[in-house]
Image 1 (cartoon, rainbow, N blue to C red):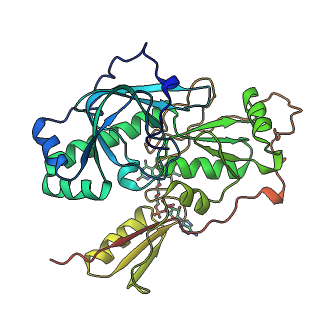
Image 2: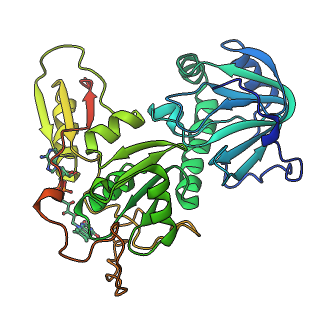
Length: 344
Ligand SMILES: Cc1cc2nc3c(=O)[nH]c(=O)nc-3n(C[C@H](O)[C@H](O)[C@H](O)COP(=O)(O)OP(=O)(O)OC[C@H]3O[C@@H](n4cnc5c(N)ncnc54)[C@H](O)[C@@H]3O)c2cc1C
């Protein structure tokens, strides 16, 4: 829970601030903090306090005024990893704050001090008045999302490389640029132990783990989108002029064209907006070292050959071993963009 204290979590050994990597962790100046102060409130923090936690549905925009805050992956799981330390003038959060996705990491106060808290809806008002500040925040959040993807933080997807549903879920995560790590049941011995610990049966795979203990068993794309907060906003009226299904290059072009002609347009996709092949799941994975960042390039996709290692594990399937009952689920549309008419 936000505000909860856990003094044990503070590691006094590693409190050096994380360097600002390509604008990922900028420091706000006095003027910017003053602007934000008009829409937020200050409060003291204590060591070990959790400001937001992995899996939370949302969080506020937080600026550190004094003291230090650690960003931790796997908080409280026994496999904690500190991925950042930030001090006065820096702000917390990442792209999820703007997209409405769930929180992927935990922020823990490492050194007591004071923070400025700005509710997200108020933040929008500040950046509308101050586009320069908006640029700093957006750039930082985009960089942080790339860093998280590179680190393999966020969701854990456990499934066999031979399962169509594993492929579907990985594609969903990759195309939506969700930080995630794939743990291949065919290659990772630790995966099997994890499955047993969580009480997951082989036929329930693939599974997606959020935070430390929320397990989704072979979720559809729509279910996964709903849980992480990617669901489309409800339509404000029951009708529109144009519905475009499929948000690849052709669908995007049709949607933009329709909206630019003044049509009330809705664009839907069962996976994500963008080109179908623009982002393919990384072909390499291991739980020991995070997978390479999925390259969002046209030619990033390289399939990896099936492993030849025989396995007697009930969690492992051989090529062709997936029967009709495990066919990819058809999913409902999960991404919608309502384009306001653009009038010249
Ligand atoms: C490996 C590979 C490499 C490529 N490299 C290049 C390149 O370098 N340069 C280049 O210009 N082109 C490249 N292409 C081609 C390019 O990807 C396609 O021409 C382009 O994506 C086609 O766009 P599209 O909108 O017609 O279809 P798609 O990109 O396939 O988009 C269709 C969309 O519809 C969605 N969809 C499908 N069914 C449903 C449903 N029932 N409900 C809702 N949504 C649905 C899908 O999720 C998808 O987002 C490459 C293609 C491949 C396969």
